[in-house]
Length: 258
Image 1 (cartoon, rainbow, N blue to C red):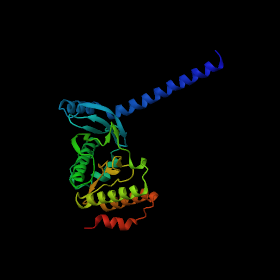
Image 2: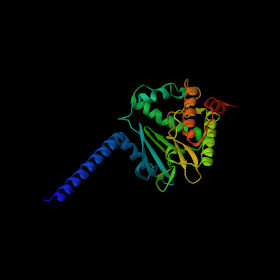
Image 3: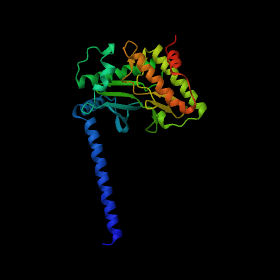
Image 4: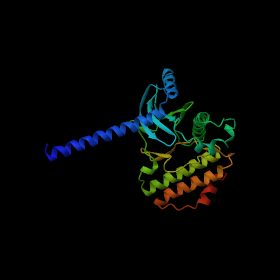
């Protein structure tokens, strides 16, 4: 065997090894997401005609995975909160002090089920207030089914991955601030994790869409104002790259103003 053939064989072995590692990682993720109870629930939702076809992964977050699906009439996003691998203590600060969820038992499964219901309710309140969010359709245990936000099976990009012209950046910024105000004044909510990682941009009309609202809290939550101020700082930090220099204290007051 000459040197060239040896190199080809080594490269081929490396490629196969990488493929096995990727398959192993994918299976590990799928095992964490698709446990027996989740598979049974998906089967039930399919039998009810809510989900017609399950597609591939849209995104993987710290606590949940989102998958593309088709319903009887529209495209869907199926968000599955992982029970086996969720660090539910991170959810504690947002749910245990929420007056809507005072009777939750302090165990992982109950907290995750409550978190799923909470995101459903938050999305509904946000949508009713005039904020553009995915329309929530069904919440069952650890599965949240929503309107799919994207085109051709591709989700709209996150704000962090979109380059905006300066005039468009100002329009997007102003819309985000208006959505924060509507959340606060009309929906009685604070997003509580707002940043360029939780805002999609509709590429057709360059408008923002708020997502990931499981941690959003009502104004009765003792940390609501602290969470709002953090959201304000995150948005101003991101938009400073476009020359937007509003003061956080002034924007904080503007959002809360009558």
